[in-house]
Length: 85
Image 1 (tube, rainbow, N blue to C red):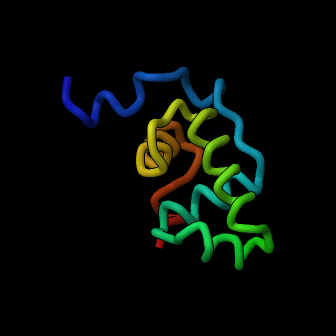
Image 2: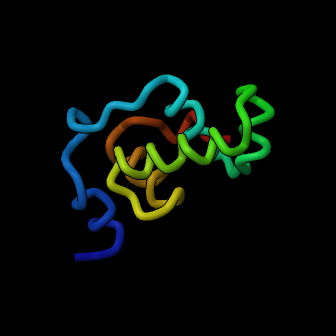
Image 3: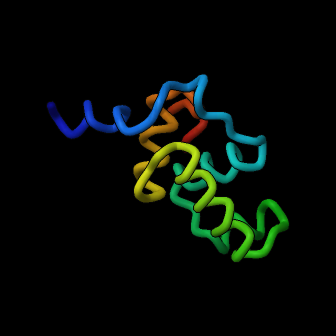
């Protein structure tokens, strides 16, 4: 099995993963390459709170890193490539 095929096998399907609107917004900004500081300025949260959200997103998606969470979210349809710029 290739690495790309392994992206989605750690956890269940989209129905098993539900992200809040804030989590989805943070995940989309991560996908765009934004730092925790940049995200915190945009969503008016402390960088620490953004990092907590990142941890929750990784847990919910079954990801080992933010990059893995982005890949899993795209595969599960939680965010789309069109949202990433």
